[in-house]
Amino acid sequence: MDQFVVQPFFSDGPVGMFTVTNATVWMALAVLCTVLLLVVTTRGRNVVPTRAQSMAELSYGFVYKMVHDVTGRDGIKYFPYVMTLFMFIVMANLLALIPTSFAPTSHIAVTAVLALLVFFGVTILGFVKHGMGFLGLFWVSEAPLILRPVLALIELISYFVRPVSHSIRLAGNIMAGHAVLKVFAGFAGALGLFAFVPVLAITAIYALEVLVAFIQAYVFVMLTCVYLKDALHPSH
Image (cartoon, rainbow, N blue to C red; front, side, top):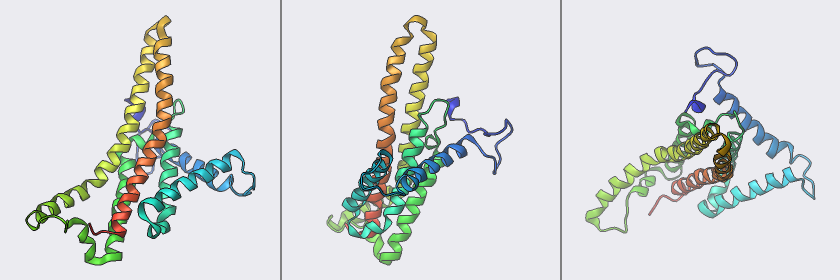
């Protein structure tokens, strides 16, 4: 598990509040790659797009359609934030697959901040747009009257658990994938002539991790869109 240890990037001293760590550097690289893809490569707006421009346009269209389909027309104005989340998580996940790199999204400290930003954002939005009517999200009016208080309590608990599940799902999947790769790499070093067996397994798992990098970003922003829909249309 040493690959997940947060360490100073330029020295061997303790990690302080303003220390530039490996997590800091790789998150900054994820932001930089996002800017390069979405801003620099699309600056020319070629009629016949380059490969990089095509990737940027496909990413834009994919997330835009997701936001529109889940939240409706009312949610389109929040598309830039959802797009930013998606691209940051995808880039961080993909960069983490480079040998000797660091996976910032494997840390709860990172994913919890992203999840809490979504949680507080949609909660504040819900109260701003609907006032106390936002509490209708917890009141299941279709249920029998005697069950409504119980269901309201269950809905309230599940609502506050959202950032926990939102953050742990992403961090847990990224950490598990990298840990499995490290285990098989250890087997490759110990088996000598038969090292090709774990190497083949590493190749297959690595391909799976590339897919997981996209899937986990997709799941994170899909849940974000669902929570945003609840804030825009809170009634059951």
